[in-house]
Image (cartoon, rainbow, N blue to C red; front, side):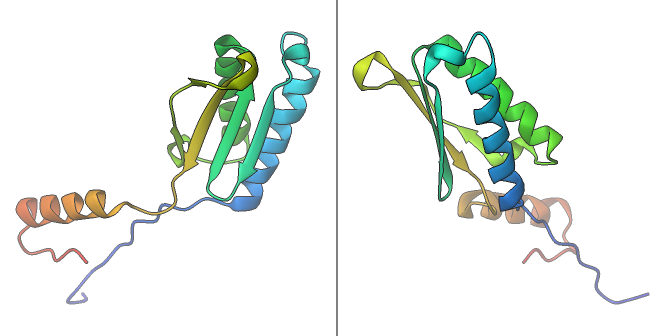
Length: 125
């Protein structure tokens, strides 16, 4: 048996699958009866998605649609970090969704500390 064993923690997502999920969600919001006239917009820019709509109810419906499309495309819902719904100009509402790729420094440090305390023979890197 080997002297050392290792495993990697990977927090990544397929960018093209995310683009496809956003495109499908946007198409569904434009054709669905209750969302057709809401003028909902979903913009994917860099590592964030911006959703704007005319009511908070429509925002929650779009969130459900986007999550269902992401799951169908094999994306984890842990990729999305949902921001607060905030009022925007013109009586509209906006929500910014950050896309998480990798582990934050604080989370990585806390995981390493917990591994060291629970398993003294293991060396986290």
